[in-house]
Picture 1 (cartoon, helix red, strand yellow):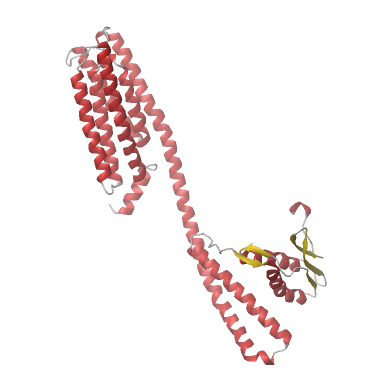
Picture 2 (cartoon, one colour; picture 1 turned 180 degrees about the vertical axis):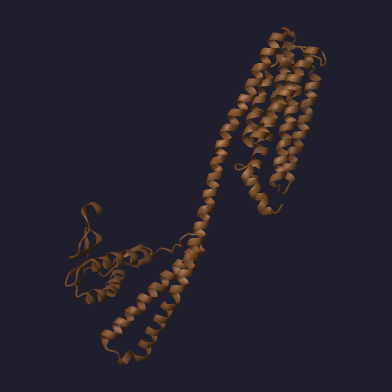
Length: 390
C-alpha cells in the first residue's frame, strides 16, 4: 500500500491516533507498570507478614519478576528504537494490553480468584482499550476478559484449577454467589466498554468532520493563492509597461514639458510604483500560505508621510475642482512603526474625503500639536460618517 493511501487509511480508521500519541501512551503505560509492580509487591509482602494467608507468594513474586523483565525490555526498546511506524507502535500497544491482561488474570488466580477484589482492575484495561482502539477491538478485549475470568472461576469451582484461599469464607464453592458475581461482573465490564466506546465514537466522528473541513479550507486557500498569483501577474505586466513609458517620457522630454504636465507624470509614476508594490505584496502573500510578511518597525517622521500622501492626492482634488487646503502645523513628529501602515491609513482618510466630496466642495487637512500630542484633522463638505458608525 502506498504511503499516501496508508496515511489516509490510518486517518480514517484511527482519527485520534498518531505516532506521537501512541509513543506517549506506550511510555505512559511503561511508567504505570513500574508503579503497579512495585505497589503489588509491597502490598503482598506486607499482607504475608501481617496475615500469612495460604497464598502461593513464590508464584506471585515470580510473576512480578517476569513482568519487571518484560517492562525493562519495553523500556529499552522504546529508548533504542530510532523511529517506529504507526503500525509498529500500534502492534506494541496490543502486545502490552494482552500481556497485562494475562498477568492480571494470573495474579487474580493466585490471590484467591473470585474472593479477591483485584478483578476490578480489569476495568482499567477496558477503559484504556476503549479509548485507544476501535469499538470492535475494545469489545473483543472485553469478551476475552469475561471468558478468561469466567473460565477461571468455573474451573476453580469444578476443581480443575486449584483454589487459593484468601478469606475463610468459601465463596468460590457457593453457586448462588458465583452466579451473582459473574452477572454483575459481566454487566460492569460491557457497560463500561459501551460507555467508553460511545464517547470515543462521538469524538472520532468530530475529528473526521474537522479533518474534512480542514481539507476543504486548505483547498480553498490553495485556490485563493492561485487566483492571487494569476491576477497579480496579469496586473503587473501592464503596470510595468505604463510606468516604463511614463519614466521614458519624463527622462527624454523633461525639459520640454510644462511644469503641470511634468508634475502629473511624476505623480503617475509614483502611484504606479505604489501599485506595483501592492502587487508584489499580493504575490508574497500567496506564496506564504496566507501569512502576511511583516515589515520591520522603524523610526519615521509622520509629518513627512502625511505631506507625501497630500501631494499625491492633491491632483485628484484639483481634477474635481475641490478646494483642497493643507495646513502643516507640525514639521517633525517622530514615531516608531511601519511606514506602509501609516501611509495606508492616511491615504484611506484623505482619498475617501476627496471621493465623497462633490465637485466644487472643500477638503481641509490640518496637523498640529495639542497637549504634547500630534493631532491630525480632516474635514470636508461630503456626506460624512453617520454618528453610529464613529
